[in-house]
Length: 266
Image 1 (cartoon, rainbow, N blue to C red):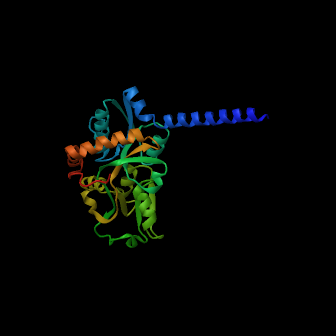
Image 2 (image 1 turned 60 degrees about the vertical axis):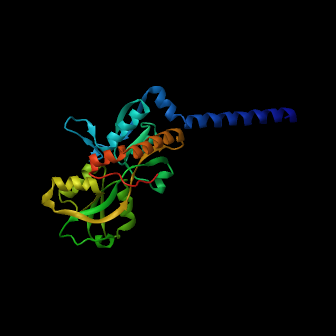
Image 3 (image 1 turned 90 degrees about the vertical axis):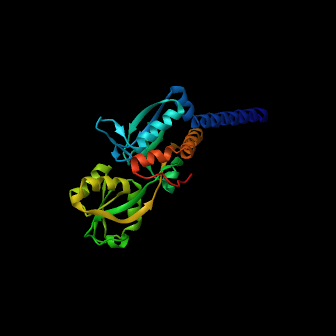
């Protein structure tokens, strides 16, 4: 190939690659613009995790996560489509654009940070192991030879895998209702869950004499955003920060959890 022709071809190729990179960059930052243009946002929420998300007497989703989703939509000035998810599929829904945001008791950890981005925290949450009062359990080592139910893919699942001795039997279920039902039915001896979720279960089943055995992890809730969608993430952060300053986060936390949101990480 003639030198001049080769240089032109090379220049055209580089310009084409640059244009492609700009195009991909624009697409990667399109979520907020798409939401504003469509005047609607799709937000993934749970319906099996009271008091964060559950189906009310009117058969409509309600709870802290649902109210937070509605709050963000109202601040963006758009309609909302609530997308029901489980712990197992909430991140895939975000990655495949079935949801613009995930507000579903989502804890932050290094593995998740590799595949999605997170906003500032919006509500408190801690994970623990619960069991009957006669069970002599005060820490992970005491779980040797005991069975515990947990929701597959949840943060508590990760912590149990990391902390429990090899002789502990971890039984994993696909959603929180199944996890709790297994414990209530006596299929397992212990339950790993969020404190608020366990509180609801204990109030409904006082005959079980369930109590907190030990804390697995203090894990505030964050909102999940697709990787690279910085414009949307920063906009949601603005809304969260304003809600923290004006007391709206505390109001929602008191309403659904019985205590203020407290000092949440950014």
